[in-house]
Image (cartoon, rainbow, N blue to C red; front, side, top):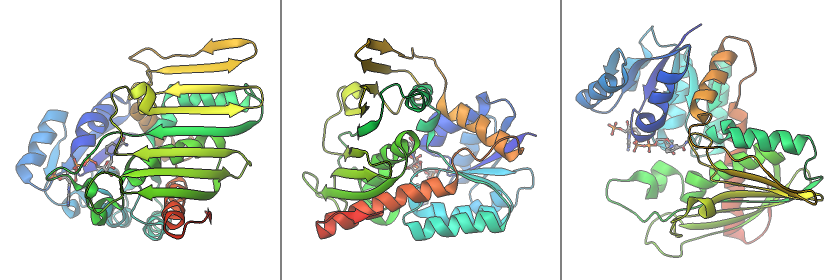
Length: 335
Ligand SMILES: NC(=O)c1ccc[n+]([C@@H]2O[C@H](COP(=O)([O-])OP(=O)(O)OC[C@H]3O[C@@H](n4cnc5c(N)ncnc54)[C@H](OP(=O)(O)O)[C@@H]3O)[C@@H](O)[C@H]2O)c1
């Protein structure tokens, strides 16, 4: 069964990652796209071989050829567009953060369930080949009992004219919603769910309505402790340092970077008393977006489970909300 995609919001991430991934994934084709201006939509369609271009989401959702949509608009539109897509009978792959709040996320999950369509969240780091290897290593007990994890995903990102990320009504927050949500999801994928969080979410540098610097201290359901740092105030001259994870256990530790590689390329080392085992991936490895699409297609065809269900996106947002609450009240908050 071919997945005929419609992209809602054919902007930057659709241009750089998803449209090329759809073109590269067997059994997937790009049928239609939207942008706010018809001519811009048509140009995108022409660049990526889509058959139709629209300037309204509603028009694309009436397109009978489309059986799945990729929601790639800014976060404030994810809930509305996912619910509309579900009501139109389309499966949904939604960009992160899934929504602005857990309330919106629940409405999205309910709408997709009520209309019998699948809702998948685009936490593509789960399909980075190195992260999949880490998960296998942890399951095999390569570092014993996991007791601690640290993930940092940061950059220097001051407010810029025309960029929506610093508008909380559009983005839902600062770096925690933008970059931290990736770390929170990766932590869930590798080490299991979070139980409670204590956080500092502060404005240190930029005059902006969203906080620019965040540190989260998490207790996981397994009992392990984790630290997630997500800043827009730290210059990222070296992705290996500013975009990395470390998982530590009773028998050793695992270090890997960068977490955001679009071809799985990067370092992965397992350090134990036996020495250092190297699982680095050279550039040109598994493309997480293509692998995610393959898993999405298999799930739509009923061959395998939904790879990243809406409940996983909901769980990430619940951690973000608990972190903001903790930062406000100065106490640890249950997730
Ligand atoms: N997974 C990842 O690693 C990753 C990376 C980057 C972004 N993302 C996520 O992907 C989503 C889109 O990000 P992006 O960087 O691609 O955004 P973008 O290029 O700024 O915008 C995406 C699309 O939404 C439309 N749009 C922008 N602002 C809008 C507004 N205020 N009202 C209505 N439509 C608006 C744009 O319209 P026009 O086409 O008309 O300009 C464009 O089609 C976000 O949720 C973001 O967090 C994920």
